[in-house]
Image 1 (spheres, rainbow, N blue to C red):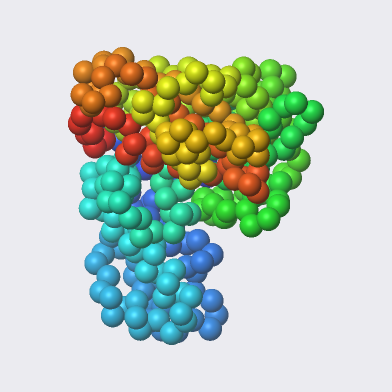
Image 2 (spheres, helix red, strand yellow):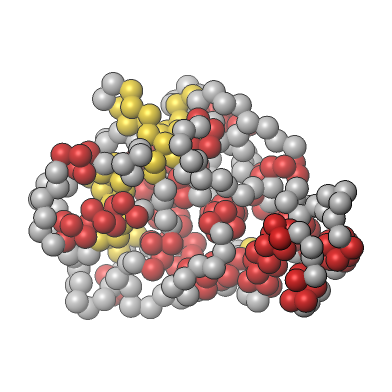
Length: 335
């Protein structure tokens, strides 16, 4: 069986009987040895002491005063965030349960990079055993910002951090610990290059063809089904559509901020101008295997998922929208 996404640190975690990820001391230590938390030569005694003691006992309680005593303001902020993240994981039986609690709280008080890291490793668990590189490449959209690359009539996506551009979103990984490096060449994954994905999966340097009717859209649909099955325990089928025409938006979920805004406009009967319509990259029809799970007011109508890019040609999916936006009667946390 091929391995992938070593940089998420899934090898450092345990699994419970239900298949959920259980935090370990080794996983926590991987954060404490990141460059942002390694005390520099001129670090104060308080910073050095906290770092040393947490490496020895990663779960030990940390008083607010221990952090406030750190002289460097950036170091204080880094420790506040990483300890808040650590405490979130330690309060829950699994990483999946911690993530669901975080996104259902309505406000996320952690930097996006921590949330992306959590999605990265949970999705690695949900896709464990997957042997389809197209699905794995599509799954990268859940935790890494993409940039549109137009080629003739094709819609191609490349990792925004790899191909550069304006303000690419930083993504937390454990790659610094593992000594991984990036190859900046972008090769669009196809039948011939797919086998190369396995040894390049942590470089995020392969492009994805998301043109309507091609394999990329179907691969992303598979990722959504695995995500929902793993975190909510529900079975759905998802069909990529080629256009918005004749779609009745009885219920819709925007897979990103821009798609949500577009869906809201369509919901209110507004016509989309050419520029806005051109930013819609995909629309999917979702149906539940068990319609009894759906809210009564929705009935048996399908749910539509909308995906779009920003005016800057960036794609930032929000996988949490799938967990909070579907018309489901009961949402059970993963355990």
